[in-house]
Length: 325
Image (cartoon, rainbow, N blue to C red; front, top):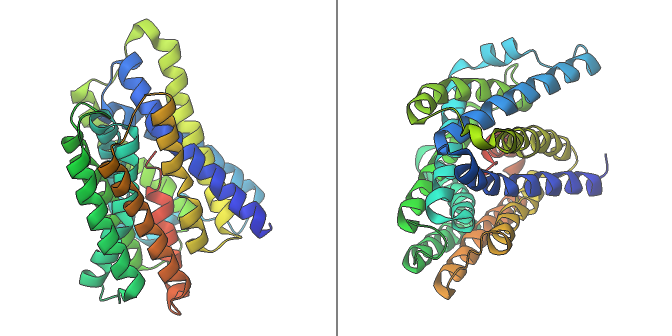
């Protein structure tokens, strides 16, 4: 695969992820279910499709594809934490969409996650932050302050609560990524297989909470709701992951992280065109600063001579948690 094809695959995956929050917002209205149940159905549908993709990979790559049992045995703790982190990350994101709107939820989650990873890696793992990392953290903090100060209810019913959920989502992402950096990528579990097993754990974790919230959608528009759930599991989950993993075989992790900024741009465009969301000047500047934080981090990785030893762990965390969608 050429670099151009890899970039295209990552861009398509990020665009697909950017539609996930919009589908969740639609499900709240037509399906009558909450964020936990939306996450559960997304996990369950996506898991089924990912299992099918794994089966296909094993048939095509006999002897090289990693069995799911081996992925679990290689590092059970990582699989468990990944599953819980995925469940927290995506459920909190969907709750943020419900309370703060699609644009704010996506930008805060996707902008804060890498900043939290940078800070956590410095404090817990002793990684050097560097000038780019310091600039990213500063840009992210200022951007978040401006977003909070500019939250005026024009994008959702409870923007401050929604920003809180988005930060919880970012914490889930950061936890999964930092675990990947700490444990490394040694052992039998590959990134794709670890994601599949993580989705299985997340599905089990979400089921009891979804039952308490109300698992079954409104039967009056069941066909439309089922179609939305199928889309959520198929396009922003199974298809996007498959394309993202394929693209990572041809492009650097830093390149992928910048190209993946298509995700918040897609979400912002949908929020503006479909849901009529508007950001005031303060919130808009804050959103730009949060996205700049990701670009600063990507620039720092590109010029860091030790980046090649860390990017596999970053890839794993990003690929597992990235569907802010």
